[in-house]
Length: 502
Ligand code: ADP
Ligand code: MG
Image (cartoon, rainbow, N blue to C red; front, side, top):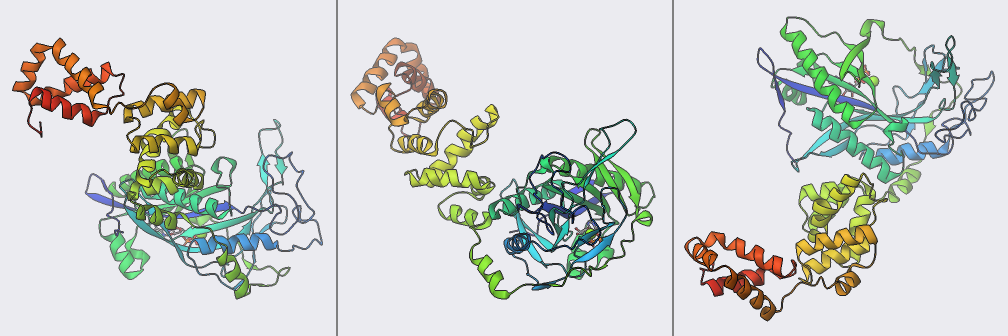
């Protein structure tokens, strides 16, 4: 684990560091809302999932949903965070047409989860730790619909009251790559935990991305002292809803800030929006226009008090999480990179483990998936679940390569056949005669035939042993790709009288 060398941006007056902190809203997976029994299912008819509590009818009282609390605790444990046994729900007051109560119930000074940590995996196999500041529970608001009528806006309250977890990081990310990797990792963790489905295109997960820039060394001084004065003024980009957009928004925003500061201006702390089509961020409101939410403890709700034993019970049912799985896969001989790719989604890791259960060796199975099968799925635009080859079949292919039953080249052809026609790979190899020829006399015959047909090439190769590859190719052609390449090489060397390392 490294401290994470910063990616520096070059400006006209020198270099700059980027600093990023994120506030992620993750919708809690639960059948009912945070304080009512209304359904949370996605895609229902507008206003078909609204209880009197959600519509803020007078006299209605919120009742906390135990399942949502459990999910928040489970997520906190997955973030290796401190669980606060007492937390408090506050009213966050503001006016908005899709907020019938005139306030949102949230947690302000006393969140249910305190400091934690997420380890992110970068493309070069390196890992970086990102501190978590807190996680709190809050209600989602409804949705205003402006495209239904020329003169009127409508309100859909189906989302109103749905439980959200707001997960706030420390400003510990330092490049668009790290910001994207953080969101991917967080999404993997909540999916493993089953606490949020992580579907960003359905709005189940969205990020407010805080970006600032400073001169090299500023971040280091911040980490040593904890003093934010060493960092630049941040801008917050609201509601970014894809990993790709997060990376684009960071890149654009950092550049924008550098240009302003280098031209002698100052950054105003403000809220901005990312326009995905234009690829740029635009001002929404400045700090001065920021709401004063007048938080105060909701008098309808008691402080939320958890029993230590209940938290321990939840901890005991936590699944193996991506980091632990990655470590276990690395212990089987996988590289950090291969292991990180396989654990990124639970389904992928499960598929890989199915292959091992069926007898494939770990490193060979990982190579086959990462270098061959995932590429095919990608090209076909298929998810792993939609892919046509079962773990058992891929396991059989990998085992036949390892046992020299088929060559790597034939394995690809075999994969084509199983992909298109299905069937048991071992039976296909038998019935179509795809077995590798290891029988020396058959290979000798093929070698001799090629040598006899090309006497001029023999002279060339003797002078330049590196050209022996041409003969190997010819022999493979003659045997339909089924000759064992090592055997072909060995026999060629003897027949042509080439040195061993040639
Ligand atoms: P607020 O209370 O105004 O929302 P917070 O202190 O909660 O502010 O910070 C919100 C987010 O902004 C956090 O994720 C934090 O890490 C991030 N952040 C704070 N200062 C900076 C900075 N200078 N640069 C980048 N991100 C920052
Ligand atoms: Mg905040």
